[in-house]
Image 1: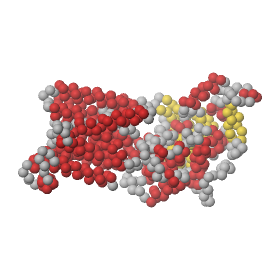
Image 2: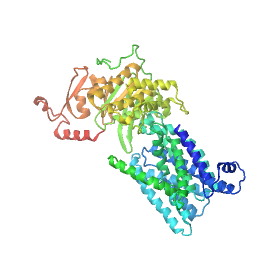
Image 3: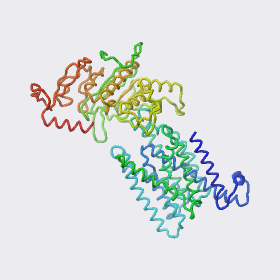
Image 4: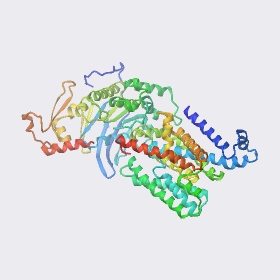
Length: 323
Length: 309
């Protein structure tokens, strides 16, 4: 029910972002363009500019949201989202080096970003491993790794002085400016493959929340499930990051917001994916039109996410718990 | 089965069909990382009976239980379920025969009792996870047996310790396994709740013939509720059998390094252990200084107890 409402909202917001902009086009004109008709002005503006941008927003939102909630559920900690523990930073650093320094193509960049994200995940896991992996240690090490990798991004951006601010912002905070059809395609394929895989693991992931022993005694192959989920989530993060940059805090926020909306007990996977799409669509619209200047989407989500991160840290500190 | 304590829930009239499944540890050696915890241990769970495992902290009780629940692969030897190597069987198939209640399972934030108990049906559901009437009945029965039906809509994290433990047991019951292993199911419960949980497990054993094996900290409760008592010492089987035969002052000294007197429990007729420490002991008993009862050993034991197992 709530999932249906979220889905309708995503479609509505997607349609809205096709209509509004410098010039407003009505639903009729937009529909004509979507059906392949030629409408003077709208064909280019809607078909070539707004449609790739809005579709990219939905796809990255789904990718970040689903990957985020997968990590948070698996590690039983809202702080353990891939954008907090450095996996997004790994993809981002590799992508920026591939694009700006090595001048590789978009597709090759995606591949490099995936390998880097997997390597980052593996490195964090190995560094945190000591008689099993404890959530807190993994999160702290991840935050450290994220800081290191973010500095790589900053360094490359500063060195490549000829690059404009748009490109810099994309790799620092995430941006949907300059989204093209060619960039949407690989991400769409990744989402189509990865989403069913993760959804098929939803029940096993739920059981893993009880602890490994309890999950195993209920018939969950713990190690296999964890490996499959981590790999798939990392692939999603990497593709999305290669396409739009590390849109700040979407992975981190989508799960907790979905939990609030859905209430306890239900699976969060689909709602979190939809909330992710809503966040990116909404933040991109707000960034474009709500302020005097136009801000990239990652700035807006960053403004939303940072206070929540602070709130989480304060709450865990107050309740006397560790991370 | 000579336990005269009346059970809280009436037992069914028909005599239970004992569990058909046999779970046996054959010469298992167990350990974590570079540490060997259990060496060459043989342990067969008697079908349809309650086995309690006791021993000092860090003697390997929980480790044995984890390995018999397929959670820890033995370094040597094997665990055999109905003639097959347990660790070569698919997880889900094992989970239909063998349930485990770990020491400290975590309830997801906000989950309500009915939803948590329903998760016990996971091993019986296919890939499409369609919920059947059979699932409904199993959950309802588990709630009723554990007297938690009234809590069905409450959030698990709001419950008291005793209620929560009953809910976890309900989840294990919804799994409908012939074998049930429990790792210290009475930890953190007050004495009334401890007895309540053990009575519930006895009901289950008598009504369904479920084979039960549990690690218990409390020697006296273990002696009272076990059909068969197993004492471990430093990762090896020290004694096993009827509680009346196993629980003697000698065994308590050897296993726990503590002097004691073992007398018949006036309530159950089972043996009961009365520890002899350094204080509050009548003069004619205090003189007994066997191995491990000196002042240093006493201090050492207390430090060990505080560290947990």
